[in-house]
Image 1 (cartoon, rainbow, N blue to C red):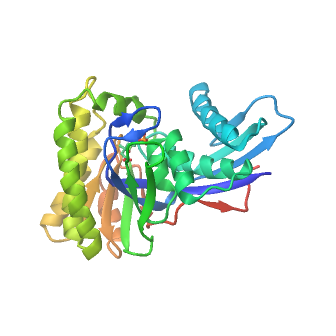
Image 2: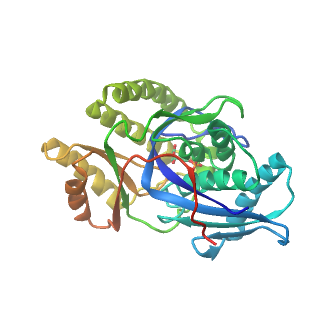
Length: 327
Ligand code: PMV
């Protein structure tokens, strides 16, 4: 049976960096993210008797060996779980450039897991799908539930999964995804996670994460935007402190990254627009603002040298099946 899933990317406000267990992708800490409506992956999967190997296409091109290997590994896990032996045809399409720190692996593996498990005849709960998606890419587990999601890091395969903390309708926040670079990053986040545990600064970061998690939960409960903003900037800067001091150093920022940071602080200080930045493993920046401010903010940001594209996202529902297939 042909099955298609649509899964949102998610932007972590409290990030995951470093793993307690590499194979199971058990994170060093809990994380919290927003699913994004305009940044998503569509994936169609079909297991077929006539195929002699798996065929994987991403954004209209046959997947390169390394990408394919990762997808096939994931397919093997699902085949084993479902007790089937057929090879699959997988066609996937991203609404944004892949592997630039825009969470393509998150939405990609979330869509693949949902489509594939259904196509294989499995009937899994949301929690099981989140756990399974985590094995493909850690942050993919957060692209399964609805809206504002929390990844309980846990310490085993069973208790490491994401769930919805609040529905996508809970708070009218907006995410501006600012694309500076469309090219793939040189060092993958998978490699970065491995480097984190050799870094003496990780310990202080994990202490700060604990405090920031408490504060951000309070900010969500009271819809306290200023507190939320303060926490997410402190969090992103602490993540990049660890990245910058890794060996080799992970210097993801570009001049435009810094220009955006300064602009955002400036707009806030002048009392013009209240928004806050966060940055993943790449040069692109995400700005969080409240509903009604997004167009004005976009106009300001577009003036900055090096900004290629600005996408406005609303909080999104989680991964779901759709009826329109890609082949
Ligand atoms: O799931 P991965 O391996 O793509 O790692 C994601 C790492 C960050 O984007 C930097 C942080 C996060 O929690 O999304």
